[in-house]
Length: 461
Image 1 (cartoon, helix red, strand yellow):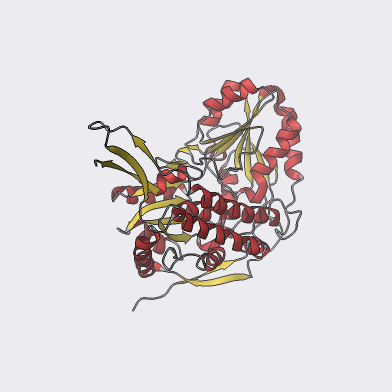
Image 2 (cartoon, helix red, strand yellow):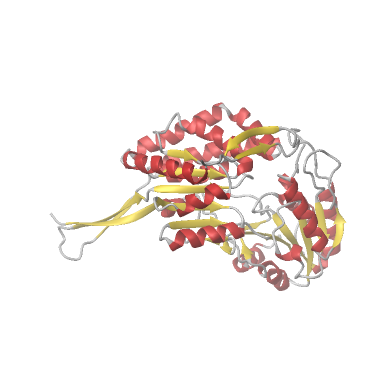
């Protein structure tokens, strides 16, 4: 007799509050979900693009009608500040409406035939099949939807496995989506590795899109590529913000402080390293410390909250351990708050040893390293000497210098005088080096490359 595993999702601000209790799907649940999605694919792929786009629009409309309720659920389940939770819910609506229209763009090309001028040589794009989507807890509605919307819109069916800490939001999303999709088009499986492993190994899963840790992402990529299926993995970053000598220091300090510490630094695009050119280093250090200390670390339900709690005690413990091993001078923060929740005071550490753990590895907490660069060239060198390459920013008043530095930064997303922690859902997104695996980016037009395949026809009358 198979034993059912049960897990709970809790409020990181108030850990005594259980948001929900759930059964792990496990291998049997995955088998049943993939079977339903596989069966539904035959009918869903035959629906017109307008019909599929209409379903996405209807889901968007219902999320909009329940915008406030969903936002508060995000706050309670993952500890996201309410202002950011509202923004995420709004972004989810925009993503759905964007892909509702994108499915209507031209889906192929014609070429001159080589054998006869009467022949037609045509290529079109087709859905690949059942897509497994493995998503993290930090953006519990936006990330599932920026994977689901293009996958469903282009005619695939999906099986979503959310992080256990974001199960309640995922269940609410399925409740809404099921009203507008045929049975089996969107399946949900719950749990951790005991559910994730059989999902990525399943022979009827044609594509896997993963967002999460480096260790798990590399394992997923090996498994899926090994059986010849499609795979894309986004695995975080150790993102630099470079402040050059001619930058607007006040603006840079305020922007970088929020990029590093907002939502307790729990974004894959959060600024982990602040690299400052020598002539303004001392001046900027004072400004960035002040900006970090001014941030509101309070209950995420309060409108003034900017930071909020970490997702769980294990995450806070790992951050404190990284600070102990980081070999740097603590400028501010570095201690838990005397609160019930998993709070850590926003922490800025001055680093001289570029091989320090804090200068090399992602902490995923409100922790950032401050480093000095003797020149623009050394700043770029420091920025690039890590194994990650997701996001980077440069602050300068010189457009020419901005483009030169931007061209040399090894990152999938480069921003000038702007936060590393921000993306546009209609533009390609993904990282280089250990931040990303897969030949295609997520979002925008790039999503179609992953969720569809090209087929070429020669038609000879």
